[in-house]
Amino acid sequence: MLSGQPAPWEPDPVIRGVSYIGVTVDDLDAAEAYYRDSVSAETLDDSSLAAGNALASLPGAGDGAIETRLLRRTNTQLRLMAFTGRSREGAAASAVPVQGPGIAHICFQVAQETNVYARILAAGATPIGHEDLVQLNDENPVRYGYVTDPSGIITEIEEVDLAALALPEPPRNDYRVRHVSLATPDLDRMIDFYSAFLGGQEPRHVGWLRAVSGETIDMVSGLAGSELEMAWFQLRNLEIEIFQYHSHPTERPSEPRPLDAPGYNMIVFDVSDIDAARERLVDAGGEIVTEAAPLDGGEIIFGRDPDGNLIGLQTLPADSVFSAQNFPDNGT
Image (cartoon, rainbow, N blue to C red):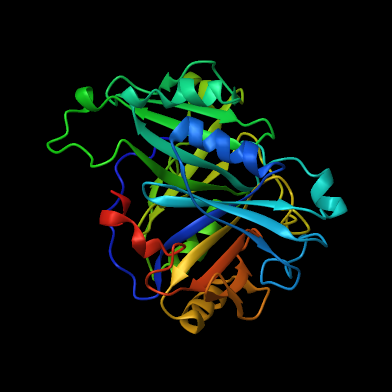
């Protein structure tokens, strides 16, 4: 929420964009229908990954095959994952709550006339805060809301009144994923990491002088007395939002979240040079958890950021359906 206008994107020679965000679901067909009916997501690819692939070797991947389905919306992709042999820890886990820690939600920014909020409720979502979308201030004709799907996975909806906004040139698309959001117990540490990992980019940063708070914020978050601080990094095709609830502190987990726990499980970056990307991640303070291995016609290394969130660094052929470079106009 409160993301404002994105910063101008400057091409990075190493990190070319976000290929997809992974999501662990119980039922691939039900999850596909949820995103299709609410945000008109398109299915591009589905596959079964046998034991021994790069994903199956990760901690918390269970001991069976992984069925996956790739969904695309204008500028970003979701890779739905269903595990046939779930780990005990993953089966017992719940989706990440509003204040995290972890990959907490993705945000769909849509034109008001798409009626996405009503559609996502009809598809089975439940509001977290107020039952209606909330306009945070009179100057900004945008309404916000957090919802959970039937498994508790959070989606943010940001409906924009384009007529009231009176842009000199309307956006090319009525839908886009505005950001993927990381909830952290230590925002400064995460800003330092992602700034270095993304080649020295300085984020937009709000709430550092005075925390963002107020009745309308509570109505969106569903948390009484919300006080939070946020930062955003701009990539080719979407933003990474990082936020910390100072009012509802969360502890950094002692163990990384299992891959097969419900909810968002990874952010996979499209990189030009896997060794250079690996060096950046380590120099920034991250951790490498796998060596390079083949996946989806390319090669991938997995690492973790300082909070333990799983990051994929993947090289791909230029024509790969998974590549972040294949969105027209970078998804704008």
